[in-house]
Each structure stands twice: as C-alpha cells, then as structure tokens.
Image (cartoon, rainbow over all chains, first blue to last red; front, top):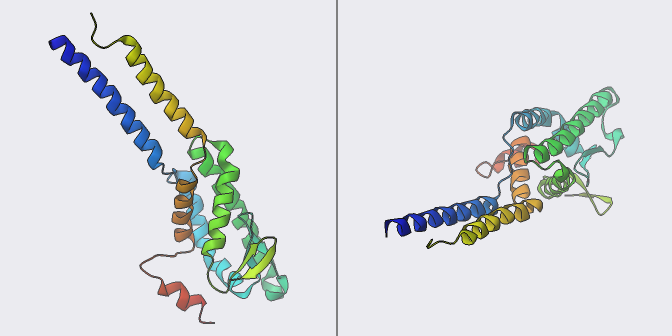
Length: 142
Length: 61
C-alpha cells in the first residue's frame, strides 16, 4: 500500500510538471528585459524627441519594413538636414539591433525576421494621426 | 509487481518533452505583438492612462 501510494505520487508530480510546462509555453511572453534590449529601448526613447517633429511634418515616415524612412527631405530646413539623417540612421541601426536581440534573447535567432515583421505592423498600426505610414507600397497619412 | 509500469513514466516524459519542442518551434505571434506594444508604448511614450499628452503635444499644430 505504501509502495503503491509512493508511485502514484510520483506520477502525480510528473503530470503536474507536464501541466506547468504546457502552461508556461502557452502563456508565452517574449523576453524583452535583457540588458541589451533595455539599453536599446532607452536609446530609442531618448531619440524619439528628435524624431517626433520629423514624423509630424511628414519629413520622415514609418516604413513597412520596421524602419524609419526619410520621405521628404525638403520638409527639413537645410541646416537641420544632416542631423535628421543621422537621427534616422541611428534609429534604424537601433531597431535592427532590437529585432535581432529579442530573437536571440528568446533562444531563436532565426525569429529575427518575424520579430521585425511584427514590429513593423505595430509601428504602423500605432502611428499617431498626421504621421505618414507605408502601406501596400505607398505612403498614407494617418 | 510494479503498479506503475515503467513504460507509462517513459511515455509521460516523452509526451512532455515533445510538447515543449513542438510548441517552441513556432513563432509566438501573439506574444511578439504584446512585446512590441510594450516597447512602442515606452519608445513613443504612449500610456493608456495619459492619452491626452501626445494628442495635445503633436496634434495641435
């Protein structure tokens, strides 16, 4: 009897572990709190103050590939153009690193393209009214 | 006589391991969307509890 209950407990623990493992997978949060990802998030947040006016004027837009694109350089005063270009280039470098780091932090570097695609959709979806977004190959004002 | 056959333990273990592998191969699209939204909130400083801030700041022009 004692032997039997011990075995039953063993199976119970095993099944309990199985249920927990499945629940953990099903809930599926992506890891985005690594030092590398956090540093990129902070860097992008700080740069946003510089980019927001470019989005607002239409000089820059939210591209379909998860990057920021210079749409209309003429909307930026000549003196500020180099700085705007540099900010956009730095933002795109951070974004590329962000997509790569998230895929890697979750143990699947091959997910990078899908992470990028997901972000691309969400950036476009959540762009604010007045900003330009790239949809179906053409630029649309939200 | 062993009331819990060894094959049952082995089968349960195999099932749990294969479940992990199978589920993990696929890209977790919903989780990725959630993660993206969290990061976009932070980068663009959008918060559900302060929707007026971005509208007043950039929409006014």
